[in-house]
Image (tube, rainbow, N blue to C red):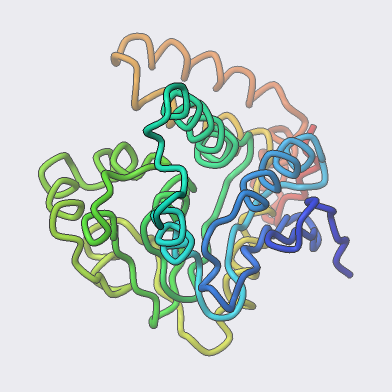
Length: 278
């Protein structure tokens, strides 16, 4: 039975099923476009889930057949009407910069640094900042009907929520620039061919299949999973010698756990290990 978590907004839902936490964008009538409530919801719920020892995997998904359309373009258009604040007033630009930096840290940086595996499950379109947030996850599962597009060029924007950074590491700088400059509509299979999507799952039963995939991942040793994620995150920033030193220290930590001893015993006894996170 799922345990519901209060995020402080109906625009972002959270629950725990077994050892998997599910965070869901919940504006299906607007393709789950982002709101201030969504950002605040992430700020509220991610630290709580990170501290919950029963949570071993975080799945981020969307309601109503879409993942997330990114910024709400209709609201953007409203803000550009005569008399609306465009940031031209002294001090407003600086305030807006501070605000967007906060939101990006609450969501993309927090997902990237979340101490457990993060899986983005895309039941449908992921665009703009919505795609950037999906890219902040460790793994991406996509339904066959899913469409991925950077979208920023289509609305005269430069991009946010880390998409340029994540794409550069996933596909290389030249391909990342092409995807931003031209904003092609990538099918799930095209995205998988580029290495952006890890697995493509059938449309029918996608939600259940994605949750089952996450539940299977949650059966792995949680301390080892956390240390693996630390290794990979560091590998994007450190030279090899420093990365090797850090990797070695984490290996000693992992092999000092009860979970490692259980895995070794299970291997010899030819049975499935039972990990406790100790």
